[in-house]
Image 1 (cartoon, rainbow, N blue to C red):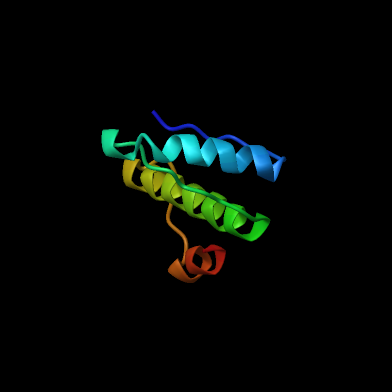
Image 2 (image 1 turned 90 degrees about the horizontal axis):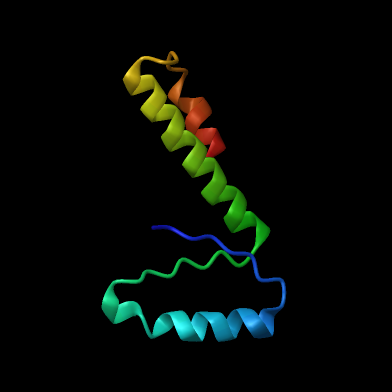
Length: 72
């Protein structure tokens, strides 16, 4: 399961991260996106992966790789 949460209060966010760190030995992976730029990059990458899967399934046609790289 993957969980994405937005905690606007940095003090609370640090407490939540501290708590989650204790579950690393159980296989929990924490991905922290701390600013808008990182969030945009992550969203564009996710969108591109979905697009590639649709191309592979034949649902859409491919486009120039330069367009994809520009979005990343």
